[in-house]
Amino acid sequence: MNHQADITRTMSAQGATLDVIQATPAALWGDARDACDEALRQGHAFVAILRGMEAFADDQVLTDEDRQRAARYRQAGDRHNFVLGRNLVHYLVRPRGIATPCRFSIGPRGKPFLPDAPAYNLSHSGRWVACVVSHDDAVGIDVETFARLKDYRDLLGAVTHPVERRCIEQARSEHGLTLFKRCWTRKEAILKATGEGLNDNLQGIDVRLEQHEPVLDHPMPLRLMHLTTDHDEATIALALNPSVPGVVAMFVGEPR
Image (tube, rainbow, N blue to C red; front, side, top):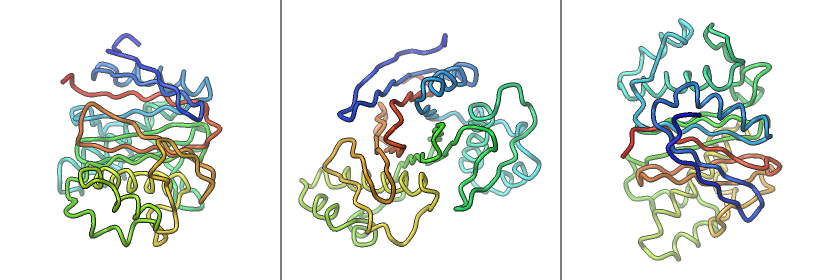
């Protein structure tokens, strides 16, 4: 991986490693694929997080159906994010050397997958697009800029478990919004890992806001992790099987 600017490693309280790679756009797509393959070879999960990479949105690797779907997006940003999501799956998840466009299958709970390939999950918000790849199907990721969020307190009743709500309401005012963002992204990551998507039982899940990296047993065994960036605009949460020993996260964007 010749284009990595920096690599750092941390060890969580649960024993999982987190390797963070800060990379320039030159890492797409060769270095990113090499890092993904090496992570999976070690039994780890790989996360690619793109910021401001609209120029790399290539619809030539999309099916005709997906190109038509992309063309229906009215906002250029939404169109780029959709195409970049398909690009991430094409270049990171599929077996090497396959040039034909991806054709996705849908699992029993509506979660897309590629037959005979690792599991993956996608998320995008604003100029951010993220993809997690793992050999374990129980994996989900959520990236949020919360650009349209007004007063988070209006959502507490619909979103939070009673324990979470007390934690947020008892926090100092400047930390309440941070805790709400943590709560929201953790829940989205969980529900994407389970394949359920957003449902009406958000209040029934306690994501243990007081813990840095909790391991849950409900709605299924999952470790929750947050991936921090040097940009304050995005909150990123990851949910994966607690047995996964580590995560390799590659952030790709223009140098600040």
